[in-house]
Image 1 (cartoon, rainbow, N blue to C red):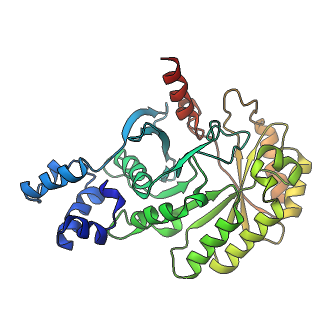
Image 2: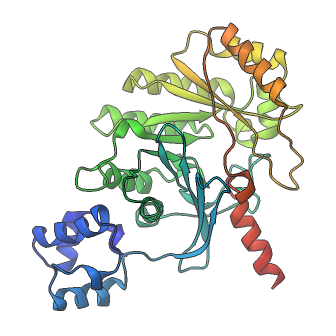
Image 3: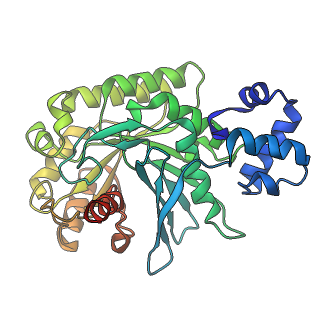
Length: 349
């Protein structure tokens, strides 16, 4: 797969000058052309060489493409040559943001109780090329005049358990010769792997690109968090917060704490007060997300009134709060839903 190589590696693999590699990359990243036959400033002989070596730019197959009724959300289900699949989502909003939400693993080993991603467990890591392919496919959905503005690594999988491949893909995305996306508009979301957070902090401190970090907290205490996020039984809230503090200290990048609001589980006023006590004094943002419910998991979305009361309580406690509203519910846009539906359909065929 051609996307597995950076430009220097590709020049070596093909035995071709760097300027020729740059021509290929302009077709892929700037012109959104993924068929070697259409790269017309390359010689016919060289195009045939590329086809013989790689087949095409993409290695995956688009199994499903769903579009929300308001045309703001699009979701792809991509199948890889080994028959496994992942989901990627394009999110548009009224602020002219065009956000690609991408996956890093096939399946997920974190098994968060309210999320469809881990229902069948972890299968394998995605390669750098497979991660990059998701972004390029989503970018190709944009019409003339639209531009990809943000990347959120919040799809299927735990990003910090596939950090090497992820960072290689993000380097291409943020490169001036790639998609030239601002590093400050890339967010890596983790369930809270302290060693991974520290490794990412060290990467930034040693000169690596300083991407935003989001920690999926989802509870104000270990009792609740251990129920909905089994990983908390391995690394508790204190350990996760200590690692997040070190990330801020070493990088200067403010951490976002994500809090999925679940009806009757973590949405009471006393939970908000507990969260205020937990995060007071930290340079952080709390991103409150009303649950996007998954069929058969037994969790529901709080009412609008409950959500507003919870958020107002956090603001009263002087926390910096944002609300991320649900998008794409009608197209199975919660992580893992489309993949689960596909697996269910194939099983019944």
